[in-house]
Length: 313
Image 1 (cartoon, rainbow, N blue to C red):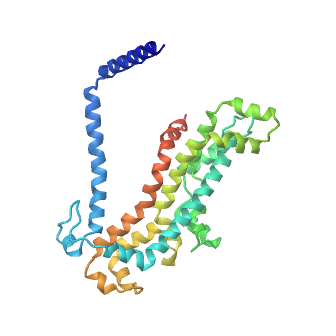
Image 2 (cartoon, rainbow, N blue to C red):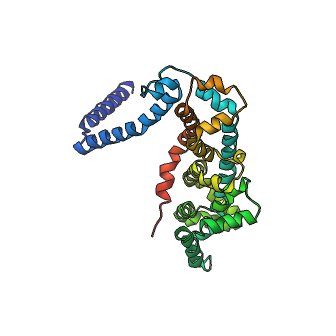
Image 3 (cartoon, rainbow, N blue to C red):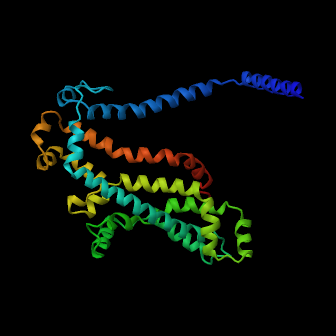
């Protein structure tokens, strides 16, 4: 028996090696790999240059000597960013917005997508509901009417002014709806036979299998909340309430004025080691770290959820 087992394993290994040798790469595959590699390098190099500038001295940066490696290495830019208080305060506003906003987005998308995934027999007037949501994707209310609504509701200078106007992302909701429509109908029918209510079916049957789709639309929501700077510029009259991207936008426009207005630490000692470019680079790099850390955890479900929930005609 031992001899037979060895022969089987050796035969399997030989066949496997033969199959491996038969694998051939076409010219298109080679060109595609080279092209994608160049695209990756093109995306990574500016980020590496930004990081190098943030760690370089002001003289080297002003002279244009910084490439991919820092010159006159210094942490002055990061010292200014982390000790000034404004950057950290703005980041906390953005983190609060992402957590609350994404939670509300996912809740409303699930509660809207689930009933809309049913046919007209189970949901009367479904076509009219869908038409209503699709129209909102094509025609917006306008910036001035939206501002007046937010202002009259007393939401200005609050976190809700950044969240509620876009509480239901319709495009992401449609992706989630199509994902639910692809689920086998037998799952819900079995739960109905057992006496489950529609809410119980949604929570105990549908939600557990929605993880890939929720990861996809959740990532859309996280990136959307984190990168939005225009809402903060419109709805926040107090700079202390700026989310991070709005603060960075104002910083890019007038860095020197904001630098000189910060009296929480010794500015003069930092000015000799940094300038506007190094300060901006440090803040832009720190602002991108949260998204870079979150994406790897959602990446495995991102592509699957996007394909399964693709918009159909």
